[in-house]
Length: 189
Image 1 (cartoon, one colour):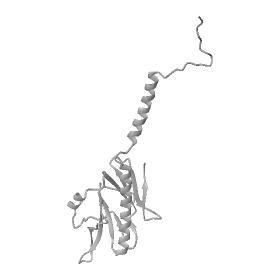
Image 2: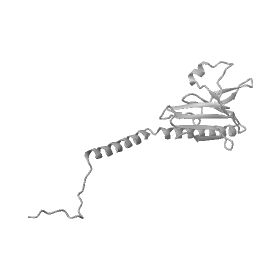
Image 3: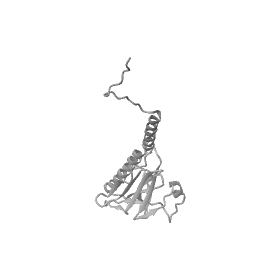
């Protein structure tokens, strides 16, 4: 008998070897791992961006309130917080800066650790905790705001506040603008 031979149009199919399949799976696993590492599960970037936007809006609100109430307001930063101040007069006609107790102009709770870095007219400022500053207050050395919102509409001096997460992966800057008085800019992604 004659043995049947495969026809010339029929080719034998060949599958992948186990090693080839394992290499492809390993490459996919490495790529997925790299993507997962870049995912911000706590959404820190959004928290920092939203907090920077809120801080800029509060500063604009303080500037507007200073104009409308004809009072001088200010803001003082600390490593992880800030507070607004108001200039109050006394019997001697001299003013003193006091923490402004207004429900709208206050530091809001943040779901992440936020850090501030402040430059005033290009010079970096060493920020201290509020408790330390209050303990060091004397009549000759009172606490004063870093940035002033004057009743004539001026915001002074020139400033730059960098708001970042504790790893400085997400940073935004609030600074004195030429067209707008207070500008917000994202520094990194």
